[in-house]
Every structure is written in structure tokens, then in C-alpha cells.
Amino acid sequence: MTTSNLSKCYEILGLGPDASMKEIRQTYRKLALLYHPDKNLSEKDGDQFKMITDAYETLKARHKAAVKSQHKKFADMYPEEAISWYDKAETLFAIRKYDEAISCYDKVTSGLPRHENAWLRKGDCFSSLKIYDKALECYGRVLEINPNSTSAWNLKGICLSDMKRYAEALESFDRATGLNPNQAAPWNFKGVCLYNLKRSNEALHSFDKAIKIDPGFASAWYNKGSVLLNMGHEKDGTKCIAQAKKLRK
Image (tube, rainbow, N blue to C red):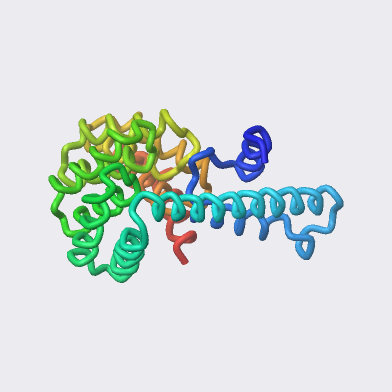
């Protein structure tokens, strides 16, 4: 599969090239429901459904191959013990046993100090435990390894926002949206920071960007509505809040 063909697959799904498999899966489900032949009988919609499905299957196969390759590289560098620690850490992370997961990720990063995903996950653990300074250190390590990691910039921004360091958080979200302008979440978080910095009009622009990318993003609708209400635009604000409630049902 060539780079141009992969780019086309992302384009069909309306995603950026660094979209996670979770984002790809969620987008595919939304589009598949929209264009499924059982709901749309036109030939055009049938062709669109096939294109969406083919794009999804291609990206899914690429993701599986990448995971397999990563594990092989992982095993080559630091054989079975490293894979065992990483898999154990992921299991503990999934059931929210963050302290224990951190200990396992430590085993990975001590042997493989440039293992990007282990640092990222360790940062998530610290953030979930509200140990924000440690979380920032981990996200910083990811960005040393890969300065173009939109996930790290986004998570760093969320961490700084939780610490109410909104100006610094905004810089991180600017980097995230600059690297990939097609992800809704960073635009939403950016809007929250702008609002807290009393830049309401810019905040509305960010929420609008998030909603344009993902019209079903309830939090962005709610945040937009809250800002409009605080600005005195009661009618428009109420509509946005109502849309958010409808989406959350």
C-alpha cells in the first residue's frame, strides 16, 4: 500500500494521517450507518459505502501490521521480558490500577528509554492520579523522541489545563491543531483555555471548528452554548445546550 493510497483512505474517512485506530473505528461506524445500503438505496450511496468500508479495512490491516512490527522490534531489542512488562502495564492501565501500571511501564522505559507509547501511557497514569508534574515529565519525554506527536501535545495541554495553566496549555493545543487540524478534541480543549483566558470570541471559533469536524461532539456544543449564554446570547446559547443534551441521550 503506497503512501498516496493510504492518504486517500484517510481522506475518505475525513481523518488526519495520525488518527488513532479508535478514531478510525468510531468514524467508520458513523459513516457506515449513514451510507449503509439498507438505509440508502441510491447507487451513489452504495458506492460511497463501499469506498468507506474499503478504506476502513485498509487502515485496519495497516494498523495490525504496525502493531505486529512494533512487537517484533520490541522483542528484538529487549526480548520476551519487555513484551511481558508492556502487556501487563496495558492490562493494569485498562482496569485503572495506575500505580501498578506505572511500575510496569518503568520496567519498559528503563530498558527502552525511547519507547514512545510507554512514556505516553505512563504520563496518562500520572495524570489520572493528579500527579501532574510527573505526567508533564512523561509527555516531555515523548516530545523529545517525537516532536510531532499530536497525542503528546494534546495530553500535555489537558494536563496543563487541569493545573489551570491555561496560557501554557493553549500553546500545546496550538501545536496539536497545527500538526493535525482535523481532530475535534484539541479544538474543544483549546476553546476551554481561550474562554478561561477571557478570549470568548476566539473560544467560540475553536468550538465551531470542533463541531465542524465532529457534529456529534456533545461537549463542544455544550461549551459553545455556555459561552454564548455568558456573553448574553440567550437564544443561540440555549439551542446549543439543547443540542448537547440531545446528543448525550
